[in-house]
Length: 339
Image (cartoon, rainbow, N blue to C red; front, top):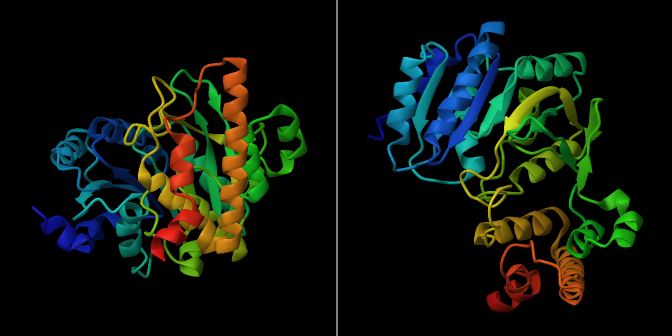
């Protein structure tokens, strides 16, 4: 059963021959969405014979690999798409790194890598828009798409890097404070022109091969969340900026594997890995003292927000136990538990 993973290069070898753009889709128990995502790439493949796709089944243990592999044959995509099995569910970075690591060993490694979520469907010309922009701007290291909601409306968001002031604003969500801290607010509403940003969602993110060769692969210490933030920060520090490209449009359902960012239905309690990834990001990139300040800013802001909500008798839209979980996972309490 694990033969495909034990020697992934042998399975990817024919796929990578002549590959210029490698699309990597990491599946975890979302086989039908992964198949729909692959189907949306068929028209893109017709535009660019150098496009290939690999779906990594992150140890779903639900028959996903067999269903996806069968769909690849049924759709007539076997000449340019494949599904490989990971031996364990090592997270988003781990799943993406499996085929990327193998592809980078080739002398003729792909020039571009498109990280694409299984709950995405690319609109016509979306891949080519990213490729064209990066060809015209050879110092751009990462480019991302404009994401759409399933109803076609824009979810045109990119982000600033998290900071102490950004954590305070994100916790408090107070109009006056938001205006004062606008330059640190993490979400950025984007317009109709290509724009340089700090980081982009990994739902549809194209990375130049030179970036991987310069800074390495994504950090597998992040199970899920913050890995693309960390990767874009490392790229920026190495001189590879990140750009948002609205001409590349991709429909994104969001939260189908985890439910963390589900835009419909009740908000779920944040899983432990979200807090672990946040802590890792701040400590790794800014140090323990900065992480302590970021925790203090967020919890103070969140406490004030919740008090204001209670006094105004407004409904609570936050994930359950968010304040308690944030305190329990703070850097200070982590240090005390480790002492």
